[in-house]
Image 1 (cartoon, rainbow, N blue to C red):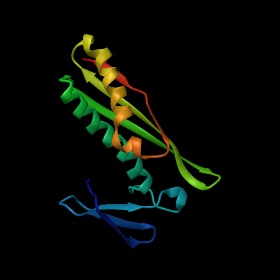
Image 2 (image 1 turned 180 degrees about the vertical axis):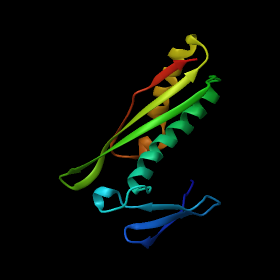
Image 3 (image 1 turned 90 degrees about the vertical axis):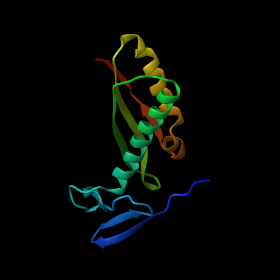
Image 4 (image 1 turned 30 degrees about the vertical axis):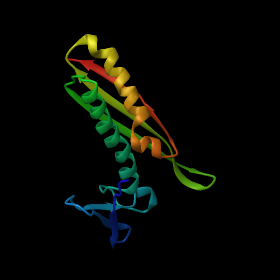
Length: 141
C-alpha cells in the first residue's frame, strides 16, 4: 500500500496553498472564475484534469519502456468537462489528446496501440467516475 498525504490551507478569499510531505514545491490555488475566483491561478479543476494528463504520460512511458518502444516525444492536452447536473457540479468527462512523435513510419501502428493501452491502464483514469477518452495522434518525424 502507498499513501500520499497533502495539506491545503486557505491564504485568502477563495485561494490557498497546497503542500506535500516531501520536497515538492508549494502550489497556490484558487477558485475558478465561474465560482467567483480570479483568472490566472491553478484551481482544483485544473489539478483534477492535470492528474489525468500527467498519469497518462507516466503510464505511457512505463509501457513504452517495458515494450522497448522508441519514441522521440509525447505531449498530451487534456480537457476536463465540468457540468452542473442533478446533484450539483461534477466532471462528466476528460478527453486526452496525446501527440506521439516517432522516427519510423513502421512504428506508427504499435505507437497507437500503446497509447490506447496507456489510456486503459492509467491509475488516475481508472480511479475516477467520469469517462476518459483518448484521441491519439502519431507523427513520424
